[in-house]
Length: 380
Image (cartoon, rainbow, N blue to C red; front, side, top):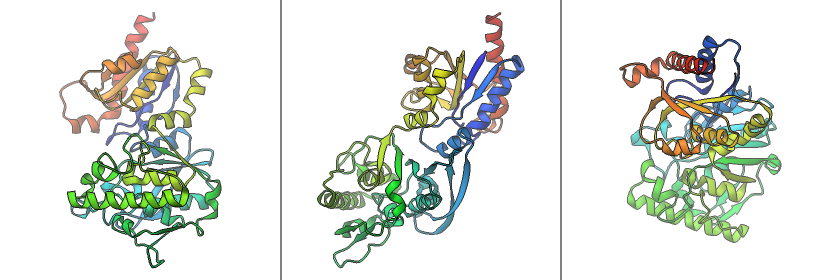
């Protein structure tokens, strides 16, 4: 039997490669002659960087950066195995988890640190970027990110504005004369699973601002400021980003990356599927089965998670697919419609979440073994 093992990480417990090896061990315990291919997967959210590094035998780079409040820190990003692509998670330098509750303030937070990581990769002659936008603490419309790359945002006195969302309202002129020359050949794929526009009651500030510490009053201030900024962009670049679907992601960072960089937005799982060349693999290899998994499988899993994407591909190529999860609950009918053959929980008895997480690799291996014992018996 030839099996593609393509799980996501089990969040807070095991990364995708560890999960895949546990699944592989379970299969080989039953049939040492089975051929297994390991392909760590991700959906564009947390963990995408390390999963894609592992999937391509790439490397993790440590670089100087700043956190959302401008404090010095070291951050990590990935470089693919062929050395051509940088994978950067915005949350690494500009993420909400880097701040405590009292520090959350989108008037002060900035994406500058993420821009520093992009700059570092550019200086390593990287020209292709995958940017994952989830988990931001910011609502600065990506201005900080662009400032780190040499863009200047000037006030009425011709002075550079300071870092932070509160200064977006002061922008009068945009100067790109000092932008890094390396930017000319760079292109950016942005993993974006939200559909919110840049401004308005369904936009970046109103929908995501409160969870980043914005009061009702601050939400209005930020939305007005970003609308004013978008008007300036439209005047100077003849491009309206106000209502572009997804432009509101990461506090408007998606919109301004579209405006100023050679960038395009993609659903996270679709971006990853393209990047790891999954379609080509499924065309060339004669897989008998796909096994995938992630920490929790429920009714929400069908909405763009790894299992959903893998199920759709399995269905397209006529391959049975089994999913393992730390827990399996709720109505999975949409996953079955997408192609899922069966889903199994890794727990083998009464246990709390902490116990399941601590023993995830062992539990994944044991459950995979039991599944393949059943398959082997049926195929006798």
